[in-house]
Length: 299
Image 1: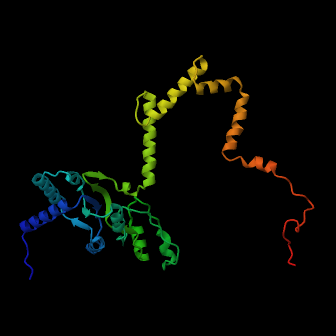
Image 2: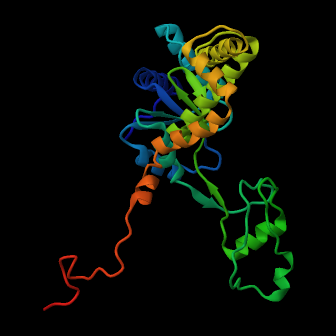
């Protein structure tokens, strides 16, 4: 017969377990556990077994344990977690890839009936087909939209049809990693998205730096080019001379050279095939197959 532990012994055991997790893991997923049953939670634990641990408990006890852990070890990196322990939430400690763990958790969703008064988490549509109801019972057919409260008629209809429209499971609300807390939306960003956002940020910094005439790494190349353009403009308007400016002055004196230079530049980039076609000598009209060294017909 198992010995029943006292409340104090349970508290000590829970503190020891949580402190061990804080020592071992640096990544935590904060999950909302509303309407999640014990069987469903067991399936999630089984699916994550190996590199992740699901911890459910009273928020006050977990906060106290984190606070005591910080005082004993001097490690306050987990303090941001205390502000996230609001409502019916659980902690998933993991060593795996955060995105993959979140996707694994999302697999364990269970359909729940539409109870009266519940706020619909998704739109509900009755699929087409035979409902098995007589015409007098179809008068209360209604749809439920996301955010609406479920009424008695909608609840009765879905119950008669055997539809459990609301999928419930652990919902990841926040992500903790090495002292930082961020939205799970960040996990959906690809490398291309990050590069695009970084490029947009660099562009904004360069624009602001140019507007303020304040040198930054992003703006310096543009400043050099703009400075060179100014020097070139002064040289063109004055007698100051240097090779590139002299060439520009020559073109400005004789604009027809611009028209000559454009085809030459194009020819260097791939238009060289055109002159060869002009030099192509047309074949004699009366040339026979025998003169070409072969015949179209076997002897």
